[in-house]
Image 1 (tube, rainbow, N blue to C red):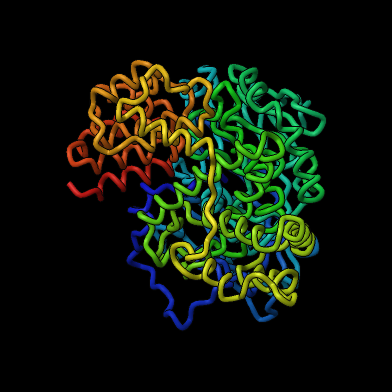
Image 2 (image 1 turned 90 degrees about the vertical axis):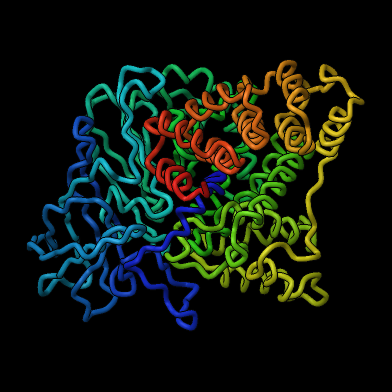
Length: 628
């Protein structure tokens, strides 16, 4: 998932729920998932079967979830599952074809974790059994966004889609919602006949619109990769194993923008080993999708903000594809170890960009990421700056900013530099092969690294040096940082233009990459007068750019510098996109510039109905907590 965690969200994500007590430091277990109620040491789910009706009028899912479970503790009688805002209608246990009603109750709700569901097993349930739960979701589900027709590209049909990561699958399926477990699943989904359902499963590109759709996911996945979308979707092929789903109004632009997906897939296989998921398709959603992309297996969900018209933002596709190895194939066991998903994937993304495009393009992306890492260190508490910090619900769901992306990538790039690319590639391929279909911890990664690379005589890194990356804040003093000649030139151009040595019309924005334009904007001196900003915008039209990443960067500067002539376009940007990365930093810049907190709140009130529930929660709480 690309750049999901938002600096602006830290205010809400650090809020503690008063009903929850953090474990004592001496009791902290780095292999335990503190973000689940599930008693996975006693029971594990092996398979989930969903049978659901999608009700657009009521904005709910209704039906059954059948959990095929194994009892690990012969004396255990109560199963605890994760839920959030679910109505449980009935519970039954099926053993050897015989169904017996089961007693159940919902426990005390927690603001972050949801509500535990406890089910008491009938006598003689056996070691393996099916737990059948009849339930319905709530319109308040944190995973589901229901879009009326006017918020879709076509404007005629409604849509619903899910976002389960990190701990939101529990708001549309009652289950053991933890990355420590992997499950296979199947589903029967009933929808209005004129709409198409797709899932993170074996979608059929030729599926007819029948109003009933069957899916199967034979490979085991963690619960956060459960995904569904229902809408007026159509399909177009991109290659023999790849294609794209979206509304017909976006189909041609999406096919053009993501035309290199098949080549990316084939390149990734040549570098990282076999792709083990069947097809690799994309789903382009409306602007309210809260993230750049989500690596749902077989079907990555994407934001339409990537449709820049020049393929300049396709690194997001490279990132989501790379998750097919790091994250989907080898998964972090707990959310404390999420760098094993996002940091490794960010490294693989940069390697793909080198081959698909060129080293200069990849280096530009690396420098942009490094700069974001330094910004993140200013926002994230030191105790959360380690790649593998102590993390409990007291720290919030996502409390590391983007540290686990960029610091994780930089860690792997430093390992590559130390051991050489050939040796490090062999290590990575062995890592994916060794831990395929498993969930692992940082300590398991470290042990594998020691065994495969660091155990040789004269190894260039010590365990202490590696542990500094994993367990200490900031960056080690000997960290190698990325560089880009083209971005250095863009920064130099910013200084020369600000001093008057270069005319505004002579800044080669039209021939630069998007990354160079972003670096130029970020390199403008703090004391730049508004007249210079006006000249820059008049000549190069940053306030009207089609590139969402350039717009994000520009409007952060506009808000920080209180360049009010561009505020109408800034507000249009906040209404155009719902992707958290694109809008949350702009709200934060407005709220913290010393003058515009009330204005930020007013803009949010006007735009909020177009945002995903998660984004609304982050921004609303951040604005509420901002110092006035």
